[in-house]
Image (cartoon, rainbow, N blue to C red; front, top):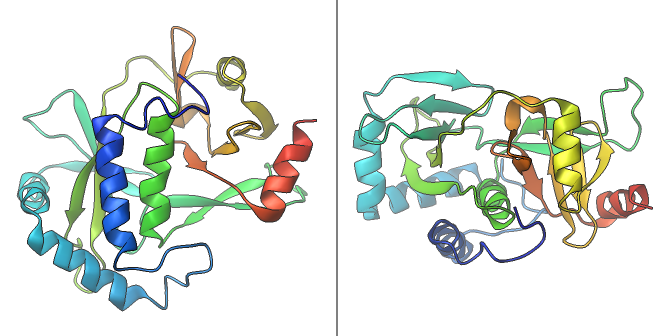
Length: 238
């Protein structure tokens, strides 16, 4: 793991993620101010056109169409593909492109300052995996966009990841392993790197593996905070 560096940005997985992000930026607005619910129709049109033009996405749809799956929480289905038994495929739901976190400056219920919510922003989802790839050797691979699972829903995003050994670590094991790489625990299951300005939320035992002391946050939510969230994170580090 190499927190805060760009050593993994040139990996094949991140080059592909960066490429699809640039393609989407050319035809869709991007930024925290975008109202994705209002742009629902346009987002659907763009993603469906990409599927039509992408042999990879068409092959992917055929590959997973009749595959068995199980529910991986609220944000995706998990699919096993016979041709790649050592990888796990994760397919988001059409109307919930993964998950993101919202910040609450107060913590009246003692559940932490960051809480999960549904996400409609494809850029946030793709950048999440790019950021996670950039901090370690564990790489998630963009597989493509696939049609919706229900009539009227939007297309989905699919990634795949190498199978990870071991059991869920304890919160203490996660904390100690991330501290070795410059991350500061700032709330429950939330860690911030003050130099890289990288925030990991939902870094709970179910979403992290620690292999020989090295953390692999395979399903944590990675993002670069700004404004009041960034200011608050920085204060927790001092």
